[in-house]
Amino acid sequence: MTLDHHAPGAAPVPARYFDGQTSRLYHVTLSVRDGMAVLAGDIERSCPLGELHVSERSSHAVRKVSFPDGAYLEIADQAAFNDVLHETGHRDGWVVRLQQSWRGALLATVATVLALWLSYQYLLPVVAKGVAYAIPQSVERQLGQGVLDFLDGHVFEASKLADARQQALRARFARLATPGDSAPAHRIVFRKSKIGPNAFALPSGDIVLTDEMVELMPDDDAIMGVLAHELGHLQQRHLTRRLIQTSAVGAGAALLFGDVSTVVATLPPLLLDLKYSRDVEREADDYAIAMLRQNGIALEHLAQVFVALGKLDEGTPYLSSHPASAERVEHIRAAQR
Image (cartoon, rainbow, N blue to C red; front, side):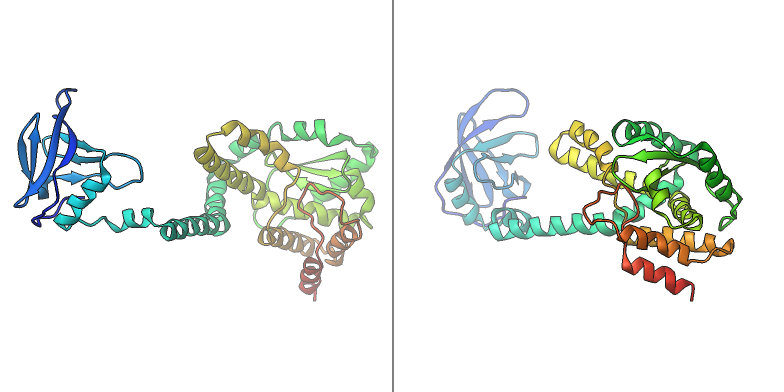
């Protein structure tokens, strides 16, 4: 900001002058006369007010007045300097006034939080979707490498289902036609879970189905509905989009708090509490609906998946994408009418 050209009557202000060429300190006083800033003391010079630049006001820092040739003043007596500025008609910009006002600071904080929330809720999912679809599938597969190993070490044990049963379910699902031109590459793996019935898809292309989920389902058509739902998550790249969103939030947290290690350490546990949004679940449900229809399987089998999950205790932890919901059951049943 620059000084204005009003004639003042304020007393000279003590200041420290640096010529911008050497480290030598000059003790001077600053006064304003006839639109000119006048220095007296160890060095004498004058300069039109309009050519000077004054640093922003803060509570404790010295004020700096810069000359066009690189020289500058440091002024510690803010009260006296404010009198000079007042006499010249100088006025802080609206940004500085906002910073100095607790109401302005509160308003800025609220606006920042609101902007971050809106970005997280609406902008980030759109960006993550675009990035996910731009990532080659080979790169996406690399993102999922090691995740199943992590889960095997913390959550899963080897499946107790007979190999023949596993192969029969894989073979039946492989015979089903899929919506669209082609299905994403995938592999069905079975595990025994420490946390109950579950099914989920990883960016690696693995669709994990637990023994407990197989036992919970009323029939194999319902299991096909579960697998179709998870294939929908792969088709829409939902977990990759979620990981991109999480990474973006983690990067933002690292910039704000400077602790990248903490962010990285929380990513694997995040997988243990993965909850998709309602819109994402609807996309996977709609994919499963289309797939079952295409293969002549009644949609009630898919509805029974969520009916069965809904009968479990509410305290049962889920790793996945299957929060039972009466709304989702109704959506599936409405699609078959």
